[in-house]
Image (cartoon, rainbow, N blue to C red):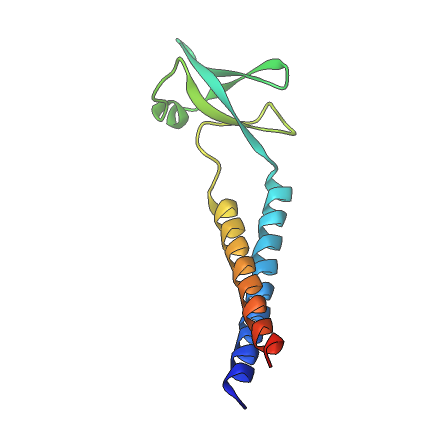
Length: 131
């Protein structure tokens, strides 16, 4: 085997491996997205009362509210405008913290592997064009 053929074979193996990994990571990210749904950012207001704290927010054209647990209230930094996230399909559900980064990490790794597969495919075809 000559050097261009070796480069072509190695690039093909790397390309197929990266493509398989990319599809697996992107499929896993999609499954998590389907299961967890989409969380949209909003501003919430925390109202402290004698019987506990309540959080209020505006989503999907209506105002919503729910009680806060003592652990949640302890993490509120700015009660007058606390960043929060509500579920797109269920605007009554609210998180006072950023959605987990796992799906974003899986999606990024998937796109990086897809780019590697594309580059490996291009590198693998270059020796074929000049032989």
